[in-house]
Image (tube, rainbow, N blue to C red; front, side):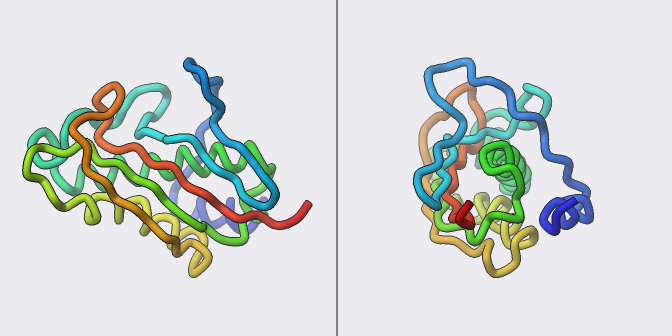
Amino acid sequence: MGQIETRLKELGITLPEVGEPKFSYIPSRRTGNLVYTSGMDCRVDGVLIHEGKVGSDLTIEQGQEAARQCIINALAVIKKEIGSLDKVKQVVKMLAFVNSAPGFGDQPYVINGGSNLLIEVFGDAGRHARSAIGTSDLPFHTPVEIEIIVEVADE
Protein backbone atom coordinates (compact mmCIF):
# COMPACT_ATOMS: atom_id res chain seq x y z
CA MET A 1 0.00 0.00 0.00
CA GLY A 2 1.38 3.40 -0.98
CA GLN A 3 1.88 6.42 1.24
CA ILE A 4 -1.23 8.25 -0.03
CA GLU A 5 -3.43 5.16 0.25
CA THR A 6 -2.15 4.75 3.82
CA ARG A 7 -3.05 8.39 4.53
CA LEU A 8 -6.56 7.84 3.10
CA LYS A 9 -6.97 4.79 5.34
CA GLU A 10 -5.90 6.86 8.37
CA LEU A 11 -8.61 9.36 7.44
CA GLY A 12 -11.19 6.55 7.19
CA ILE A 13 -11.57 6.97 3.43
CA THR A 14 -12.06 4.09 1.02
CA LEU A 15 -11.95 5.07 -2.63
CA PRO A 16 -14.94 3.83 -4.63
CA GLU A 17 -14.76 1.77 -7.80
CA VAL A 18 -14.95 3.95 -10.90
CA GLY A 19 -17.86 2.98 -13.11
CA GLU A 20 -18.43 3.63 -16.77
CA PRO A 21 -20.00 7.00 -17.56
CA LYS A 22 -23.62 6.96 -18.70
CA PHE A 23 -23.10 9.96 -20.96
CA SER A 24 -20.70 11.04 -23.72
CA TYR A 25 -17.50 11.80 -21.78
CA ILE A 26 -14.60 10.08 -20.07
CA PRO A 27 -13.85 10.43 -16.33
CA SER A 28 -10.30 11.71 -16.90
CA ARG A 29 -7.77 12.63 -19.54
CA ARG A 30 -4.02 12.59 -19.17
CA THR A 31 -1.91 14.83 -21.34
CA GLY A 32 1.80 14.86 -20.58
CA ASN A 33 2.21 15.13 -16.82
CA LEU A 34 -1.27 16.53 -16.20
CA VAL A 35 -4.45 14.61 -15.39
CA TYR A 36 -7.75 16.44 -15.81
CA THR A 37 -10.86 14.98 -14.22
CA SER A 38 -14.38 15.48 -15.45
CA GLY A 39 -16.80 17.11 -13.05
CA MET A 40 -17.46 14.87 -10.04
CA ASP A 41 -20.61 14.94 -7.96
CA CYS A 42 -21.24 13.66 -4.44
CA ARG A 43 -22.43 10.13 -5.18
CA VAL A 44 -21.75 7.15 -2.96
CA ASP A 45 -22.73 3.82 -4.52
CA GLY A 46 -24.57 5.67 -7.28
CA VAL A 47 -26.72 7.81 -4.93
CA LEU A 48 -26.18 11.50 -4.16
CA ILE A 49 -25.44 12.03 -0.47
CA HIS A 50 -27.21 15.41 -0.67
CA GLU A 51 -29.51 17.08 -3.21
CA GLY A 52 -30.60 20.65 -3.68
CA LYS A 53 -29.41 24.20 -3.26
CA VAL A 54 -26.92 25.25 -0.63
CA GLY A 55 -28.36 28.15 1.31
CA SER A 56 -31.97 26.95 1.18
CA ASP A 57 -32.21 23.14 1.02
CA LEU A 58 -28.77 22.50 2.53
CA THR A 59 -26.47 24.09 5.07
CA ILE A 60 -22.90 25.15 4.37
CA GLU A 61 -21.76 22.10 6.36
CA GLN A 62 -23.81 19.76 4.16
CA GLY A 63 -22.32 21.48 1.12
CA GLN A 64 -18.86 20.88 2.58
CA GLU A 65 -19.69 17.16 2.98
CA ALA A 66 -20.78 17.10 -0.67
CA ALA A 67 -17.55 18.83 -1.75
CA ARG A 68 -15.49 16.34 0.25
CA GLN A 69 -17.26 13.43 -1.47
CA CYS A 70 -16.65 15.01 -4.88
CA ILE A 71 -12.92 14.99 -4.11
CA ILE A 72 -13.01 11.38 -2.92
CA ASN A 73 -14.64 10.47 -6.23
CA ALA A 74 -12.04 12.52 -8.16
CA LEU A 75 -9.20 10.76 -6.35
CA ALA A 76 -10.68 7.40 -7.34
CA VAL A 77 -10.72 8.51 -10.98
CA ILE A 78 -7.14 9.75 -10.80
CA LYS A 79 -5.99 6.51 -9.20
CA LYS A 80 -7.63 4.53 -11.98
CA GLU A 81 -5.89 6.75 -14.57
CA ILE A 82 -2.35 6.58 -13.12
CA GLY A 83 -2.35 3.43 -10.96
CA SER A 84 -1.14 4.95 -7.68
CA LEU A 85 -1.90 8.27 -6.00
CA ASP A 86 1.74 8.34 -4.89
CA LYS A 87 2.49 9.51 -8.44
CA VAL A 88 0.65 12.79 -7.79
CA LYS A 89 3.29 15.53 -7.50
CA GLN A 90 0.81 18.31 -6.81
CA VAL A 91 -2.77 19.39 -7.18
CA VAL A 92 -2.69 22.25 -9.68
CA LYS A 93 -6.23 23.60 -10.00
CA MET A 94 -9.78 23.04 -8.82
CA LEU A 95 -12.90 24.28 -10.58
CA ALA A 96 -15.94 24.01 -8.33
CA PHE A 97 -19.61 24.78 -8.83
CA VAL A 98 -22.12 25.20 -6.02
CA ASN A 99 -25.85 24.83 -6.66
CA SER A 100 -26.76 28.04 -4.83
CA ALA A 101 -29.98 29.50 -3.48
CA PRO A 102 -30.72 33.04 -4.69
CA GLY A 103 -28.55 35.47 -2.77
CA PHE A 104 -26.20 32.78 -1.44
CA GLY A 105 -22.61 34.01 -1.65
CA ASP A 106 -20.62 31.66 0.57
CA GLN A 107 -19.40 29.29 -2.15
CA PRO A 108 -15.75 29.49 -0.97
CA TYR A 109 -16.74 28.13 2.46
CA VAL A 110 -18.59 25.24 0.83
CA ILE A 111 -15.69 24.32 -1.42
CA ASN A 112 -13.26 24.36 1.50
CA GLY A 113 -14.74 20.92 2.25
CA GLY A 114 -12.92 19.62 -0.83
CA SER A 115 -9.84 21.84 -0.65
CA ASN A 116 -9.16 20.93 2.96
CA LEU A 117 -9.33 17.22 2.15
CA LEU A 118 -6.73 17.61 -0.61
CA ILE A 119 -4.41 19.33 1.86
CA GLU A 120 -5.05 16.61 4.48
CA VAL A 121 -4.18 13.92 1.94
CA PHE A 122 -1.26 15.49 0.05
CA GLY A 123 0.07 18.09 2.50
CA ASP A 124 1.51 21.19 0.80
CA ALA A 125 1.28 19.41 -2.56
CA GLY A 126 -2.50 19.49 -2.08
CA ARG A 127 -2.63 23.31 -2.05
CA HIS A 128 -4.07 24.48 -5.34
CA ALA A 129 -5.40 27.35 -7.40
CA ARG A 130 -9.20 27.40 -7.25
CA SER A 131 -12.42 28.86 -8.57
CA ALA A 132 -15.63 28.52 -6.52
CA ILE A 133 -18.63 29.46 -8.63
CA GLY A 134 -22.30 29.73 -7.68
CA THR A 135 -24.83 28.48 -10.19
CA SER A 136 -28.62 28.28 -10.33
CA ASP A 137 -28.71 24.49 -10.76
CA LEU A 138 -26.52 21.48 -11.44
CA PRO A 139 -27.30 18.13 -13.11
CA PHE A 140 -29.57 15.87 -11.05
CA HIS A 141 -29.77 18.64 -8.43
CA THR A 142 -26.38 17.77 -7.00
CA PRO A 143 -25.31 20.54 -4.63
CA VAL A 144 -21.66 20.57 -5.75
CA GLU A 145 -19.67 19.58 -8.83
CA ILE A 146 -15.87 19.67 -8.82
CA GLU A 147 -13.15 18.98 -11.35
CA ILE A 148 -9.43 19.00 -10.59
CA ILE A 149 -6.14 19.01 -12.42
CA VAL A 150 -3.12 17.24 -10.95
CA GLU A 151 0.51 17.03 -12.00
CA VAL A 152 1.90 13.50 -11.93
CA ALA A 153 5.39 12.06 -11.99
CA ASP A 154 6.94 10.96 -15.27
CA GLU A 155 6.40 7.33 -16.16
